[in-house]
Image 1 (cartoon, rainbow, N blue to C red):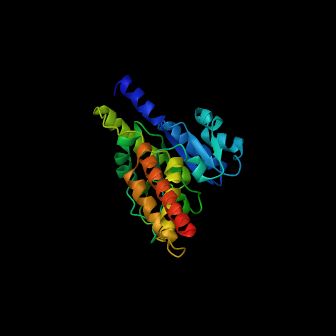
Image 2 (image 1 turned 60 degrees about the horizontal axis):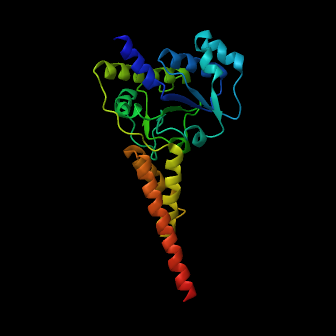
Image 3 (image 1 turned 180 degrees about the vertical axis):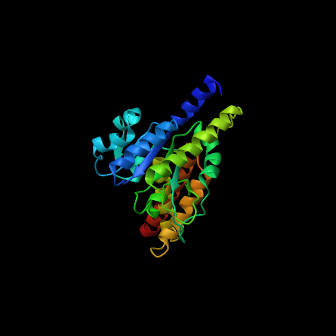
Length: 259
């Protein structure tokens, strides 16, 4: 592969960040930074109440990935951390009634290719002992599980390395074949959350959502729109329609009260 192709891959990987939720051990953060750097990804974001011990992170990152440790960003919540991203891929080893069907990292990265050219992408990883919660996963457009044999528990840095490798591999192949089929920019997570809030208001206004089944229906709505993907304009249209509906309902009630 020529120099121009390598530069293109690097340019695309600049749109990608690794988001680590509540990592317990500084060494795992450092090892994750080293794995990401080896695959051309230079952004690490932490969801944690404070930054881990710097010396312990750098020991595992080595001097080669020290620059990634230097610019780590920290947020208090997953919602804040993924707010500027147009596509979020979560990782999970657990199955359950409320979990959607998972694809392998290779399948997910192939599906991610059309998005990465014009969108900021986050790869989301949970803490070492329990992984991502259902609440964390509600911010994800896709969820992937790394296929293993009998024992499904991988070290955090190992999981980061596998996903980064699969993405790097997919991009190398895509660029080598002249892939240019990139879709337009998707709505950022912060605007998508505002859209969900408006939809919830409408559904509560018409009595569709009950406290007993609220979580079930909102999770299904999130999974649908997250999987399909929305552009910024489309999300704004939905919010505008919801706002108008709520206003109209309020006017009807006011008229009925005045009468």
